Length: 303
Length: 296
Image (tube, rainbow over all chains, first blue to last red):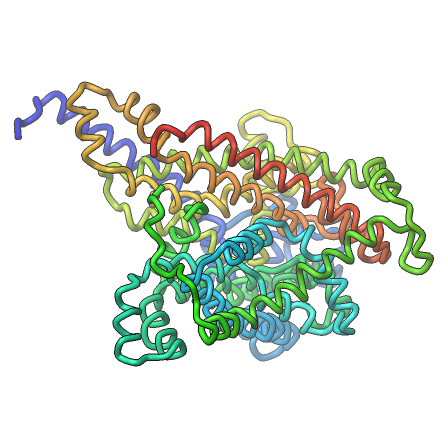
């Protein structure tokens, strides 16, 4: 290959350095809110109150007598003194937040677990056998997937009402289990499994159940991980469903409750926020590639 | 884009196979029918009667009432305004970042991870930081004043829309960017080489070749951003609560109607939204079909 002239190479290098710097700046902006939250969780409650106390109009007067409160809000990245006081209070003294965290867990884990099971069975059926009727059904799943909550929550609520499960966790868990998102992704992935594998297994006398558990599931393992991840982060962040289905705020997950404590216990909010993001952040660190793969699978709606 | 291969699985099925096929599908299908499809017929029914006790058919009166309802109009206007602003931005900005990340720059995987990070962080966890930044005495206003600008009460005036658009972009650009990166890596490399040899400059290659190959991805990212734009209620709710001063969205309207248990109103507004959504998505498909026709 002919070497490019020096001038061109220098120009390309300069463009590349500029682009890297520009993108890195933007990337820092993307990390900023998360970084601030984590950093602030290591401040003492006193420091938090001094920095952000002005935000709360009905601020506790007893506290304000003792501590200095800045007129302006000072967004600070580095704590004056690193302290675990917030975490200790949240974990050992004030059990409200842990209860709400637990509410999130018992809503999200069953949805993710059972949706994956139900969806992989259905996806196998969609991938293995095709026909006019099947294509039509699949189209129905896609349409349902595209509908916003404002549309699907109404039928969900009507059924929950008829079954008498409004204001119980089941009213969120059951519709969640049958959400069509995972079926869509897994069916697309399972369709790519070469028919020859399946024919070979059949010749060896494998039944449908064996083909499913021993060929299809292992071959789509990474897609299943991806689906679990994407579903988990989506449901961990749920707001719409609890507001409508659970009038009893005791059942509310932390994703809704967290915004309520902001006005009362600002001094604790950051630690609670960090505790709440730990599960998804861990999943991200250990499963970034699955996440990226899962997102790529979800693309290409035309299959 | 991949042409459908001759379908290896489609053949006449034995009866036993039909039964297994149904068994695999049954759990999911029964749930989907029970929770989504069948109640939707009830929704249609409710939208046509005056109320669930009287059961008098009133045909389109409910629709008329919803469409002339001030709260619904305001919610629809705000949601539309938000989507029209946020969706194109989300598509264009993530495409730009994807193209940059696809070129040979350093730290690609770290940068990719940084853009994806917001997706993993629950909205509730960072909402406090957004509040501090956009509060009347907050960081952004301090910066504005330093530069000689007037402070803005972000969360209580219509300029809150800007805040919400920023929060939306922050959360969704990473996801869209990954979709574009996947789309870009599917463009045949030799095509680009041939184009370069034929003397096509980078701009020509991008606008005339890459964009056309990406058109299915652009369609998908647009649809996805549109769907996600309806989820912006989360941010608005967590930021401003049940009764926002300026950012009254469709989900607020639904929540209020839910709490009043006005089934006929709920049903007709759900149908209106479902129809509008279907029409928009169908239009997007048609546009993409014309735009990307000769590529395949």
